[in-house]
Figure: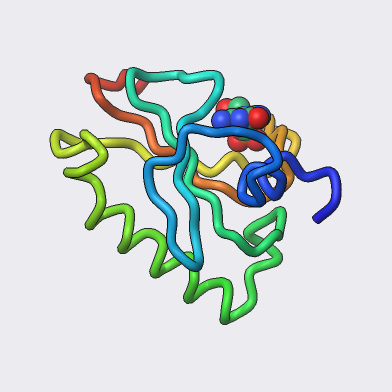
Length: 111
Ligand code: DGP
């Protein structure tokens, strides 16, 4: 997708600190970390919102969650982590390519 920063990162047009990639997803470090470990897990397919998830995308998202669970120890997240999807204006979504924030590496506040 033209002018999508995450598509550009995945195409290698913008540098990023990648920690994992396969045919379906890329995981790289967030440029504005909100925790000691702050990763972004991004499906290679461009779509912006959960409401755009058809059955194939729902299956992709299920596999993605399963992969995050399996990868957590090697990502330094064995002691736990938090997953966040910012969806739409009220959540402050700034990049309109669906992505999962992975936060960890420390105790996370929950108020
Ligand atoms: P969101 O608010 O959920 O749309 O979060 C988008 C995140 O993407 C935000 O935490 C900062 C991050 N981000 C934006 N541009 C870049 C970039 O060029 N490189 C990296 N690594 N992260 C970026």
